[in-house]
Amino acid sequence: MYKTIFKRILDLIASLIGFVLLSPVFLVVMIALFFANQGKPFFFQTRPGKNEKLFNIIKFKTMNDKKDSNGELLSDSKRLTKIGSFVRKTSLDEIPQLLNVIKGDMSLIGPRPLLVQYLPLYNDFQKQRHNIRPGITGWAQVNGRNAISWNQKFEYDVWYVTHCNFILDIKILFLTLKKVFVSEGISQEGQATMEVFKGN
Figure 1 (cartoon, rainbow, N blue to C red):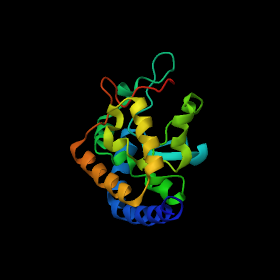
Figure 2: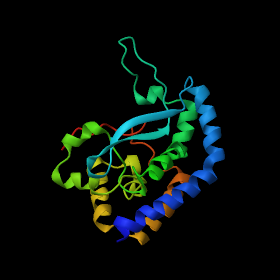
Figure 3: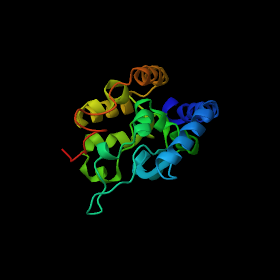
Figure 4: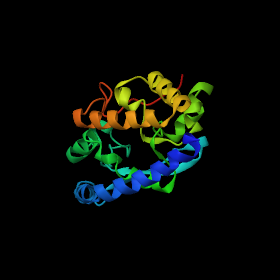
């Protein structure tokens, strides 16, 4: 009952309140990134949601679009701007996703929505992460975020899918706030974010 009905109701109420309260921060970050990214403060990308249904995720744009001599985008570490690094470190880049939650594409808490090109690479166990709406934060995020391996991340995701309940969501919410304040697990060692998933 919680997973199918009450979770969505709580998501909608909490995300509406959260967006209103964070609107001053939203505006300040948007303006700062507008100038840092040549008029492009937002990042849009297609991601798979519940039952692998595709949707457009919205985040603050923390990287510029600089390319090499061959027209290929530079590495993440070279495109991450100074203000973008701050926004990512403080998790402010996640604020626009409250709009995804309001719309119903996402939940406040659930497995993070990953890249579409990863879909054919998942095994049957890993595919279970798409049995519920993806989240802004989740069990994997409070247990290492980008600093853990892909296998560990998927194990945490599927564990959450099978154990999802109100008390667990509250626990994840408070642990997320703690992670934000201490800036843990933002990136994998040697990476600006995390290495690409290449399958099992």
